Each structure stands twice: as C-alpha cells, then as structure tokens.
Amino acid sequence: MIPIDLLVHGGDVLTVDATGTVVPDGAVAVRAGEIVEVGPAERLRGAYAPAEEIDARGCLVLPGLINTHTHLAMTLLRGSADDLTLQGFLERVIPREAELLSPETVAAGIRAAIAESVRGGVTTALDMYWFHEAAEAVAREAGWRLLSGPTFMDVPGPPDGRPYADRLGWAEAHLAARTPAPGSRPVVFAHSAYTLAPEQLTAIAALARAHGALLHLHAAENATEVATVTELHGMRPVELLDSLGLLGPDTLLAHAVDLTDAEIAALARTGTAVAHCPVSNLKLGCGIARVPDLTAAGVTVGLGTDGAVSSNTLDVLGAVRMAALVHKAGGDPTAVGAEQAVRMATIESARALGLGGQLGSLEPGKRADLVVLDLDRPHLAPRHDPYSTLAYAAGAADVRDTVVDGRVLMRGRALLTVDERQAVDGLQDAVSVPVPRPRTHTEHLTRNVST
Image (cartoon, rainbow, N blue to C red; front, side, top):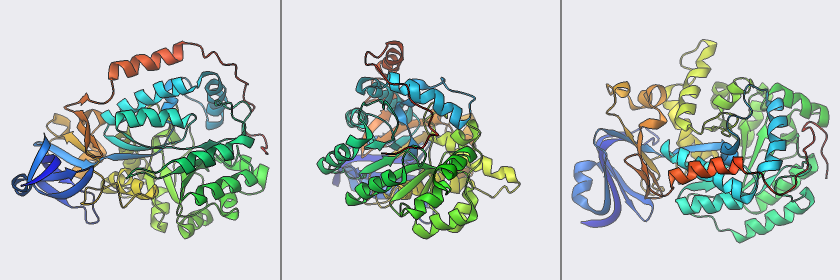
C-alpha cells in the first residue's frame, strides 16, 4: 500500500471538475498537501496507507470555499456602520480605522476572522487591508491560505502612518522578498479610482505586473461612486481603468455593480475577472450586479463576502445562497442556478484569482483544500442534488471538517489551529482598549486625489 498523509473517505465527493463529477461513497487521497487521487472509497482504502483519516460517511466532501474579496480584520468593526449608503459607510468607518488599527489590533481581527472562516468551510481568502504583514503572520500560524499584500489608498493619516510617496518603495521591497507558496501568488491592492489618481493607478499596476502579481481594485460599486469618478476624471471607473491599460487577466475587480454593456464587453475583451459580493451590495443599497450578463459575455465571476462590517459575516455559503436567489428577482429562475452559484465560490473564484490550476476543485495535482459537510440533519434531507443542497439549504454551521493544504484545521467542529476563546476575547479586547498612537482624521473620500 502507498503511504499518504490523509485519506478522506466514505462521503459523496463533489469534485466541481469540468463535468461536475460526483463520486458516491468516494474518497480523496492527500500527500504533501496535494491531492493524489479521487475515486471510490473502497478502492482507495485498499490502495493507500494514510497517516491520518477522516471518516466522511453521511457527509458531502467538496472543495474548500474561496472568498475573492474581503477585508478580514474589519471584524473589529462589525455592527458599527449598519443601515448606511456606501458613502455614509466609508465616512464612518475610515476615521475609525485610523484611530483603531495597528499591527496588534489587525492580528486580533484576523485571528477571529480565520476562526469564523474555517468554521464556515472557507479555505482561501483575498484580503485587502492595512498591516497585511500582521495578517499574514497569523494566517501562517493557523495554516490558513491568505492572499494579501501591499494596499494603496491615498488618504490623509493612513492607519499605518506611511504616506503614499513612500508606499511604492515599501511595496517593491515586500514583493521582492516574498516567494509565493503553492496555491498562492503575490497580490497588489489599489483601493479605487476615487482614492487614487490616474498616475498613481498606472504606477501601482506597473509594480504589480513587474512581479507577476494580481491587481485587485474596487470598481463601480454603486451609482454614486460612478458619478464621483466621472466628475473627477471624465470617465466611469471601468472606462478609466480600461483607458489606463489596467484591465487584463491579472486584474480582479471587486463589486462591478454599475456597469454598461460596453464596460461588460471591455471586461470580457481584456479577460478581467469580477468578485461578486451580493450580500454587501444589498446591505449597502448598491444594487444587484449584472452577473448573468457578465457570465454570458465570458467574464469570470468569483464570489466574496466583503468585510464583516459591510456584510456583517464572512459566510461564503451564505453568499452562495444569495447569489443563487437575488438574480432571480428579475423574473428568471434560471438566471443563476445552484450549480453555477457553487462554482462561483469554488472553481470560478480560483480562476478569478489566477489559481484555477491549483485550487477550486477536487482533482489530482491540486492543493488539498476541502470541506466535509454533515448531511445528517433534517434541513438537508433527503439527498437529491448536492448543488441544490449547498445553494439553498446548507449553512456554515453544517461544516464539520475543514482541510487546507492537507492539514486538518477543524475536525468534528473543533478548531485545531486557532484558540477560539482567545480569538473572541482578543477581538473584544482590541476594540475596548484605546489605541495610544495619535491619528489624523480622514477627509471626505470624494475629493480629488493626487500625488
């Protein structure tokens, strides 16, 4: 028998491969963080000698969920900026961030976010936030897949105290010093076309491309943003990004709610992907993104939660359900189906990150990120269609086991790499203790920005 590190066996395996293969009473064999085989449990049990096993009988085994747009340490501010427009939300949150954020508070916020995410079967997140080095350290300790990197946002008194003029050199040093682990890649974050001038956006994009990094930006989140950018620069956000040469297969736009037909065509032409955040978009009154039109045009659309202050949750399964439901509001129940919504949270999210060859499905050669979801519950019975079960009935609390890179982070609903009590207490302590550093109050975000 062939020695391996982990064998997950006995459950129905939802591979999310190109043909949507489901293996009843299946198994996934893992060695050195990589899937070596997927197949019938009886055969794999006879072929491999695992150091560790997960008995998944009565469960659904699926790829780990991928959060393609979030601000994880915003767990610090959950519940502090509800029932506001996007612009009102930003005016409340950004000054508070300047007062509150430090490496220590971000570490506390990210630790709680990882605990929440692992409980919900989320194995990867693209995280745009300040003090990314602190976030990365906590994620490494927890064994969790975090894609992060330098963030650019030209506002007075940024939380890290680093003026924009110093940020390019700092980011260059960061990118030059990092070697991405398997299942990861470098990322550069440019906040938006309303907090960065065109020349700044161009320089940031050049930095990202010089290092083969993913470029991630907010764009066209609501009509007011579009009007603001148009007033500042004479073009709508996506038009501006296209004119600057920032669209492309290594660019991922967050939200992309307010789009014209021409802008959808530009995203398709350039291979630009979109991170769809349906819960946040609805809560902030931004509208409903044109996902059916985007996918019909050939645009890759992944799924995100946004931060826990704009959506109040990091529950990607909840976003799956919302994505499968909200687009039916126009009268077409087939607009986004159950399978498409699940794919948006797995393989399509992986493709949106440029990591479709490594993540997003259970296939040999991919990283061993997987979830075991307990089906032995009244609200999940009977078992007719796994995609339907996931999209319309399952919730984060149904996740029993979570595996990242072949390492079991949660077994039997018990977190193994994060002290959950410490994470919750640390989060509360972080928002209760005043930050000693003085901060400069942030000006209104809709001003014209320049270097």
